[in-house]
Length: 149
Image 1: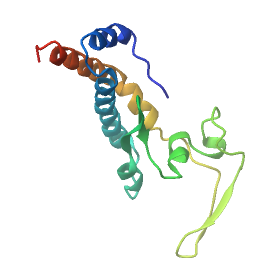
Image 2 (image 1 turned 30 degrees about the vertical axis):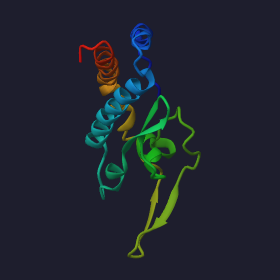
Image 3 (image 1 turned 180 degrees about the vertical axis):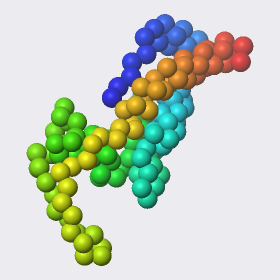
Image 4 (image 1 turned 45 degrees about the horizontal axis):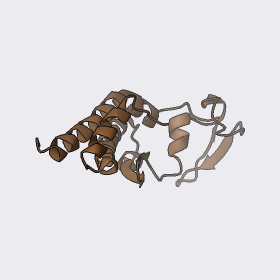
């Protein structure tokens, strides 16, 4: 998912004219906003062992991009579900049933699991806060560059 901030051009032009570092200010705000999304995702994440919740991070992906997510392979299956019970808009699987054996030797058959979204809702919940963090960082940099900070 992506988040666009309207009207940020005006602020970045002003900061550039004052000699401030626009990219640095935006990155700082994005990272703070990403941390807010991370916190929300951890609260919304379903918990079994806690491994998924504990793996959620917010980190710089590139110069002006922050990624909030997890490196656990099964996170997408939790977010979007699986099989017939999963989100039909996501190509999660066409498999109708799975058989698996637990560590005690018991066999189970499942037809999938319903979605338990936590990342998407976290971004939706925090999108205004992310925007505010970026704007606040730019405004702070403008104040510092103009000698008012």
